[in-house]
Image (cartoon, rainbow, N blue to C red; front, side):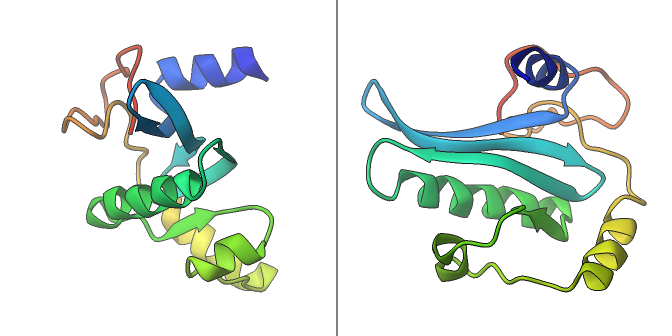
Length: 126
């Protein structure tokens, strides 16, 4: 799994949002972006609410880029409090099909270097 995510990251598809408190990693999330859908793989926190801040930051990045769907995989009360809603499979598949009609934005989204054609630079983060 680690090798697969490292390869996806190097190719510009896997992204992470990290929340730091000084020199310490406080929490974050990571996942894969295809089309205009972000597939969240995992959230983690070492400091209360750090993963919530990561998700809020991610949403703020994805909306201006035209993303229409974040797949959180597992509905939780934590995600519901942040505005996530469970949708029927048919609705999910319809939204996913529309989101995947777009080319994937690859690369580092934080510095405006996201690309539709160029390979991503190593070390890119959201």
